[in-house]
Amino acid sequence: MSEYIISGGRPLVGHVRVDGAKNSVLPILCACLLCDGGIITLSNCPRITDVQYTLEILNLFGCETSFADGQIRVNSENARFCGIPCDLVGKMRSAALFLGAAAGRFHQAEQCRPGGCELGSRPIDLHLSAFAKMGLSVSDTGMEVKCSGCPHGADIFLRYPSVGATENIMLAACRGSGTVTVTNAAREPEIEDLQNFINAMGGNIRGAGSGIIIIEGVEKLHGVDYNIIGDRIEAATYLAAAIATDGEITVSGVCPSHLTAVTDLIVNSGGSVCRKHDSITASRGGQFILSPGKVETSPYPGFPTDAQSLIMAMLLCAAGTTEIHEGVFDDRLRVSYEFIKMGADITVSGRTAYVHGTERLYGARVFAGDLRSGAALVIAAMSARGESVIKNISHIERGYNNFETKLRGLGGNIVKLKD
Image (cartoon, rainbow, N blue to C red; front, side):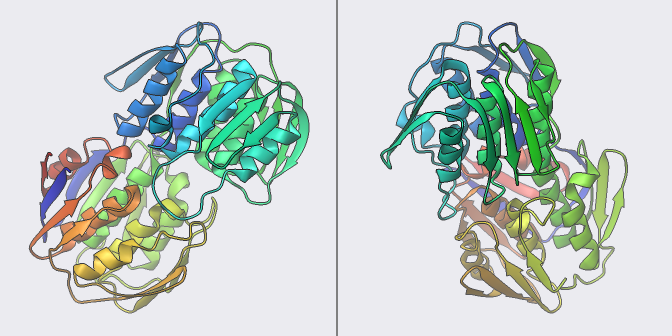
């Protein structure tokens, strides 16, 4: 099990460019399966383990793929239907998106239920009920899901604006027949990126970002060159680290408007934020971090659940008490107990954590339980006095490319020890 060794107490200073968004490139790679003519070239792709798993699944379908210098090429012209082995599906939540992609391309899909980070209950019933409304025959044994039939037009209301369900509907419907209208659709920037990619291949989708998405089915999709948007959660990680360590970091390659909820909170906590066309700079100039009061995660454009643990790490030494309510996942506050090992003062009650600011943190041996909490522990370790050991960093590598290299470039003292 690989681990990070971190000597904290140094301010992180400098410039870092984020990679393409993990939460964009994965559904876009699934959408590549829908293309039955021409080469797809994706630029700004992060070399992370979830991308590698996704490429392995595309290869199982018979797609030809290559990955070099941040660029992925996919030829899915000769793809054929196949079931996906449980060991691959179990490694990442986004594998569920191959249900919609396979149903759209082959009119059948079959796989085990998906895995990924353990964040509590994450059912796919919204996905499956939407498929049924589009005319697919759905079988769900609790362990395995099968779908068959040609998707047709439907009006679909999502009782919750699920990102995964919205993406799966788009993937299944864009090669179907008729018009699918999704109301209360997820509004995340990555949804709009998926829409733009499918449309660049010849699809006909509109409304992403508005909450109402209209998908007109088309017969064929063609190859395209496409650039993935910057990763707003990776950007939030470095911005939070700048405040936590009393440093100053400029993050580029990201759209500042995608991070408004995060940067507003940083300002409300006493930090300074400078936004430019494709960059954000954060610092606190030696000032105390202040509690912003209450933080509650919710679907975009609300405060992102993926940034919740990152901001908690930033606020561990803030003056006052911060109430953090997790409104999306029911088990995302587990990282609190790892923070406590480092001297944090946190009380957890259900989905709410009360973070009582402490004077300083101390190095400790901690365990990354999921992707974002792992990155949050790195932030806390960077601001702590002494040496920390972060174990199980394979979770972190699911979403961060060259994380330790980028942090060393900012002045961080971090070493990766391999198995």
